[in-house]
Image 1 (cartoon, rainbow, N blue to C red):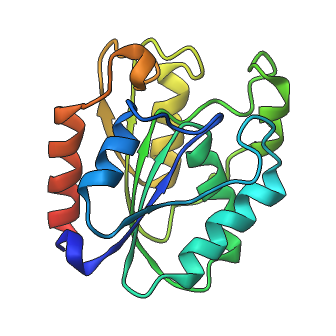
Image 2: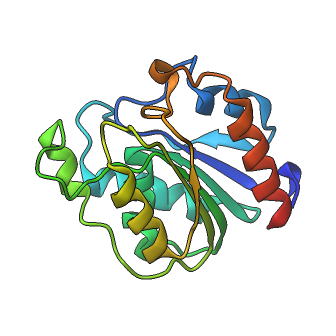
Length: 182
């Protein structure tokens, strides 16, 4: 699949992805990419976030490819029962452990627990060994339950701009390969 053949939905996490974040950079470079907007980025409500994701998927005109980061991953997975159109694939980066009672802010737990069934579409989960929002073992377990290809990003923090992942060329190349294989 090529970029022009897909509706690429960028699904940021808690507080959105700023201009230096790799998601924002990719959105500006991928001609068919659009961001799934949330009414409240800093006080996420599961029902609102999942409704926004489902609306974007259901309004797509081409096959859907999702690019989600952090809490965006949880929003996508929790929105799946509302999808009326098929999703071709999902590129999940740094899923948070929304079942961890120590997660901050605590209201992020309302996005959990994750479903444990295999996903109905191809997916990749990329996780860091030192992500403050999810242990590597939990991320690997989530990916296994979903039937996702799991990629070890090494010690990469939360894979966001604050962790030094603005341009993230390795991620871009991995996404290009994922898209080509769809």
